[in-house]
Image (cartoon, rainbow, N blue to C red):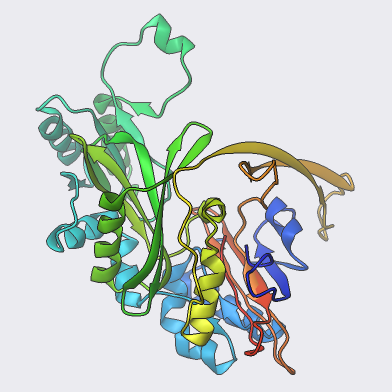
Length: 400
């Protein structure tokens, strides 16, 4: 979406990943390995060095926001624009429990929830929330993506369960025992959020907002198997707008909702671009490029009215990935194949680039560049895209 932008600007992509053979790097003109399992200070130093060496103009981090949010001035001093929401908002939104507490106080509908970190607290919370007959689930309270999510189910297994697709189920007894063993062995136990299992479909709202939290546009989409529906639902976008305004989120953010008793409630909010933002391309609105313009010019540019109501399909595609030799590592075949998800759909089968954190950078005089930092729970990734914006001759980085 950065390359195919409405300003017809030339874009180059710089990328890094802890896995130098990561399929996402096939979209990058410049590729580099980044450090694995490092703290915020070291990661921030890496990102600054990467941007300095490559003269990166814009940095849009899809992960490791806490490591970068306080470095806006440091990036500016080397000529890099950091696309990031305020550090206080990031501090809250990277904790699911603090998110629910703050969002509820702001009038955003949230489900009932309990924060636990020991066996007794877990068992009590599960019993309390299940008392009305609702299914209960739990997940880590920190920023772990979908890792650790389980639905609590104490029913005995049936043959038909064994023939059904695997589901993330766990019994209350098994989880309680695991927490007790961890405590007995002195293992560190993270906080968990126990809450009702919310009805689907999951709705994801991709938001573009100005610094200060004024929403420019919000595009909602729901997930039904391999299909995605582009929704015209003012109720869910109103919730997203309220949350974005309360936390003063800037540029790209994402609000996820599900339903309880037929009403939309907050699932989680992310002060960054979503992994599925590329799906919004089918509405005719280029959110990543609009965010880049907003960061660089203070103007998102003319945005068309989103085309909503369409259904798109997620399919699989394969790409060949060149293997980069690593000193001291046994040689592998010259190339291997990785399967990744891409988007096809309503424009005659055109394949949209697979999800990849990207940075944008474009030469302007002697300066150029952008760097993007991304990280998952066990691995981090950085990518950059360089863009020359007509009349401004600047560069942008974005995650998509």
